[in-house]
Length: 479
Image (tube, rainbow, N blue to C red):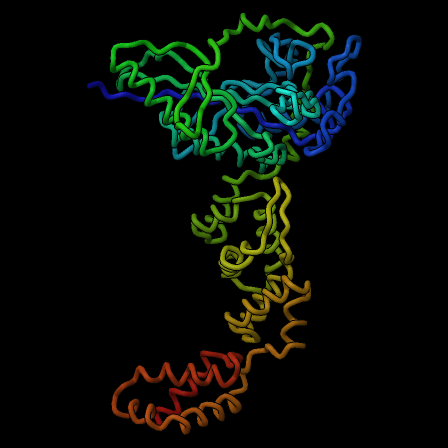
């Protein structure tokens, strides 16, 4: 039996976060009532002429730069012709032989996945099945004309799991470039997968099958696993894989034929006569490059090299652009206030406490406590005003009330007790109240000291400074 390897290339469609559609001024807002964000242009009415969005072009250039692609000074719009109910014009405005950008790459687990091209195109409408009594399918044109970038990867992926990690890395790249919200559920980030199998060691490619419209990381992984199994089974039984488009059925965990795979000539691409060529000059590219935010990978490397963060902390804190921005702002606010270990302490607090109360919606994130207020809280701990456990209680009240740590600690009596005379008085009371435990300690059961510490903390409502309690008890017990 031959050993097989998969050859996978992904075509990702990512919606750009523009306010208006690609060729008209209609809103791109998700969730509007059906067929309300429409006009003659995106409805494909006769005589309506498209006008390209400058905002969309600049965002597409940002995508290309974030992926290391070469932005072409001249590219062309093309009509991709096919019939389907969600395509009112009978064609989709896209780019074909002269795309916006070429080349580029993305590193995934030490593997370089090459990017063949990045181009702009408009989205189609959305078919709604069985939404009204007596109707099979209705069409909502709100999405028609929404700007997309298609990112075509080379067939450099060798497993379904690696394909999933590539998609996650690509989504992260686009989100940190602030051009896509990464919302798979709403269809703003979805992909088609091209997969074939071949014997290990062979260089020639097998017959390629495309799996369409995969809109979750789990679906991508499971669909590819199912299709790889299917192709291996066909080849090992002496059959031939058919070049076609297939869909994934989650319930049965298999893929099924949808149609014979189209070739480029099936779409009859030709330059769109209503649109001149797209020209992107060097000044525009420089302008976009200058305002392109720092990538997640760059932040992780910087934090580990200059701030002493662990790889785990850096990975968690780049889970969302807003969280990464919050951490950078907190580190800046802590300068001169928390000492050399400040960034690590902020990272520890953020990963264990802050992220519990953060809510995410696409590129938006609700972080209820500002960086400066968390730094103030950690500053109180460093000065001994609050203990670590008290800081957690204070933080919960900060989230609930919006008040500062200092205000909560002072008005609610949560300031840590650090008066040695007062702590000594409590320690003496505890020792006198527990003569049996004291006798056991005198008899050599030194682990009883922890019991006394706990009793003192209980008597002081957790406000006593733990290190000071231990020092006082050591002195009294030694005497």
